[in-house]
Image 1 (cartoon, rainbow, N blue to C red):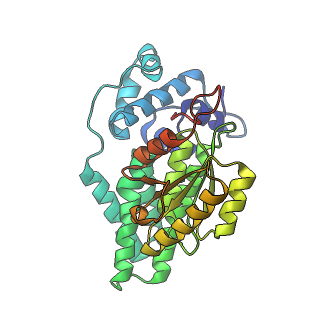
Image 2 (image 1 turned 120 degrees about the vertical axis):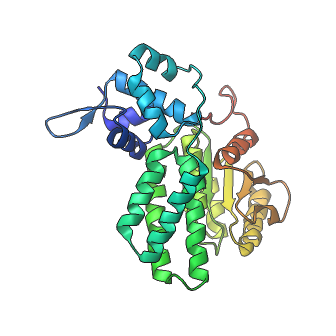
Length: 311
């Protein structure tokens, strides 16, 4: 029998998502200890793995769960062990748009309960990457635009951002560290404060098996150099969200290139292509595609293949 933390590690399903699949869809039914702690058996682990494979194959959780519940365990084990997931459409974009709209409306109304419920549904009905880039991040762009139009007080905007930041932080923590994998530093250059997309990328990279150290917003240039030295970082990834971030990122990359030319440098975000200098990678496309591009750019480690492998 396994604790929820062990079940999460063995199945590859983050703890918040595991709880959502258990509570909303009944994919697993753990036993409880006298103290109330959940315990999961091998069948539960296989059901979680099979559910994850269907969702990663394009099924929405509400479509996948009845399929998993209706399968005999032999079929569940086959699917969990690598059998190709049968094709079925993912959550339609209208569903994503509706959830994003609910997040914006909740922010406008300063309704924290409605905001939390919309976030619950977003992360409970899609894998992390889809929820982040199709629902949460577009919603926060909408919140920012509402603030710019004067429809939303800065305090309400901060409250919504803080709620989303907490969710992303929880997902980052649930993804766990990867001892022995390449260390990747992720964060924002000096003067940059819009960190939601950077944290979403950091979480996706952790879920792909990289050992990610997330430094957060407004990190001084000297600190990037010091942490890169102290951790033996294989790569540094900066978010260039605003126009000024491109220049600041270029300064960090220039300093890293001069002192630690072996470190892979990568920039993502709206203004990543404007980062000056040469020798750095511009991350474009989805979260999964950006992490895949970074993995490809990492040097091979003797006797171990690439520094990390998507899981």
